[in-house]
Image 1 (cartoon, helix red, strand yellow):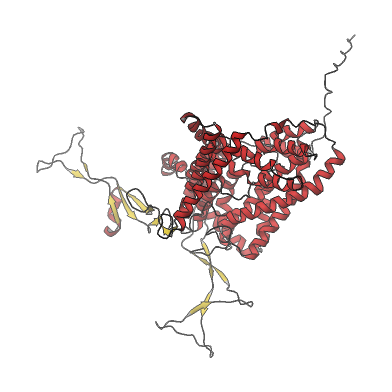
Image 2 (image 1 turned 180 degrees about the horizontal axis):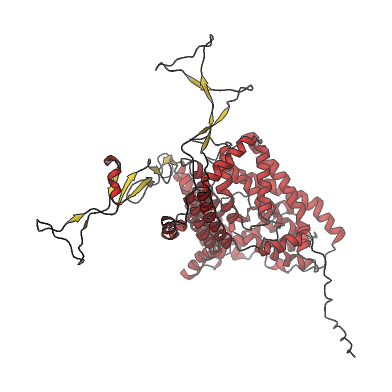
Amino acid sequence: MTSPSPAPSPDSKPTPTPTRRGILDRIEWLGNKLPEPALIFVILAFLVIVAAEVGTRVGWKVQPVQLRVAMVEKTDADGKPVLGADGKAVMVKKLDADGKPTTEIVDVGSPLEPRSLLTDDGVYWMLSSMIRNFTSLPALGLVFVGMLGIGLAEKLGLFAAFMRWLAMLTPKRVLTPVIVFIGANSSVASDAGYIILPPLAAALYLAMGRHPIAGLAAVFAGVAGGFGGGLFPTAADGFLAGVATQSAHILDKTYPDVLVTHNLYFKAASAVIVTLVGWIVTDYLIEPRLKRTSPIESQDTSALTTMALTGKEKSGLVAAGVTLAAVLGVFATLILTPGGPLSGQGVPTLATGQVPSTTPVKIVKGPEHNAVPADQNLFRQADVLKMGEDHKPVIGPDGKPVVEQVGYTVAAAGKSSMTERPGDRWSQVIVPMIFFAFLLPGMAYGLVTGSLRSQKDFIEGIYHGIRSIVPVLTIAFFMGQFVAYFTYTGLDRMFAFAGGELLLKADVPVPVLLVLFVLLVVAGDFALSGMLSKFAVMAPIFIPMFMFVGKSPELTTAAYRIGDSVVNIITPLNSYLLIILVVLQKYKKDAGLGSLISLMLPYSVALWIVWTGFLLIWYFAGWPLGPDAPLSYTAGGS
């Protein structure tokens, strides 16, 4: 006889009834099964090794091609060729029925073949280049230096105080657009917006007699959904610029370096678009529905007690504002003064005064150097003493040690090129400008408020920014190996040419390509989290492909921003979703991840439709995406 089950405790909660797993649950489950981003790059690097080996064995070849403007002989009224001063026919662009230049695909060079990494030289290269593959990443220095200043300003409390001050000044009738706008610009403080803004926005809405969950949703839409927008360059922009440059050089080594400000104009305008969409969705869809279906369960406004600024914090903000104005004034003077340090064009140089450059060379081993024309020899490894079997120098008839030439001969294989290209001097110091524009105001705020009392506080502030990007640096190490393997094997160019030619032959209209690419990025966000790691995977493939159809890396990056941002607010792979869920449960105790995703889904859909449409309008209008950031690409120059 079984004993009766004990009566449930009054405080015990009923065991939840298993429910059938829905699509969002399945996506979350699948996403949690995926490896961490660093391990994903390890897997990708392994796949590159396998693909190159298989391609080598099956004899896969790809013919490099280039899209060029078709040229025809210019003719006179009688249909005869017009000759130039040199007696040769004058060539002009071939026009179509609408009077626009036509293009043609032409072969360039010899067919490409994959280069195996599973050879003696390949294994040696993988091991000997491991450190260089990491340290030579273009984005590494940009992110590191930028975060030194940004991290200190965040650690000393400048960002939190500024956000609170701006929110408290906001009238009730424009509370939503201001909250969304602050969120859309919070990415300048790394991910601080995810942590600081949601509880404050919810409490502020409640204090003003509005639904707190509406405030939470509005600010989350701005922070996550508008992550790709904003008025200011960020450390992430530096990373995107570095990867975009590296990807563009797969197809065109002469393409100018993509600037940190490559999407600055589009980003600033996008912040306005995100604000308007967030405002409309919150005030006319989300909040009315919340009032009908989710009565306020908590009247707790304790978060507002930490929201009000103290006298020291107000003085600190004034000091930071004055310091920022002074920093920007100094840089403006350096830029605008004729003959000033940052005025006009410039070329970055080394400490020796030399211009950083690379010279493509071919290494020929040992005795084979005799087959290399003498005028192509750049240098030869130093002569060495000939050693006998007794490991002592061999002495010649003249009584002197015998010298022999061994090792390598390095022969020229191409023209030298600058590693840092000429351009506006101010554009080459964007990252130092960001560094000082956050470091010095942050220090001023800390000195006034007392959060900066010693050199230890200063160093801790500097360390704070670096700690926040440790995951990025870890990912960057493995990403560097993947990117380098991709280049060494030649698969980067082979995929680019094969895919680019496929796009050309498909003749899909550019607007359709942009929309499809945004959708592809959206789908990718359900498989791989992180704006930067996902871009590092996609950029080496899609930037060259879009260049094939005449579209710039800057335009591809702008489309990527949209796809990555709009799904941030609903993808289960966003680790900050749990932080937002904690705040949501404060005002709706039975809320789960499904509740949060269903709350934010209207924002995601609306932002995707409106923001993508805005990009198409921008494209048809022909506006530049940022300083020296065109929409189109032309082989040999943009």
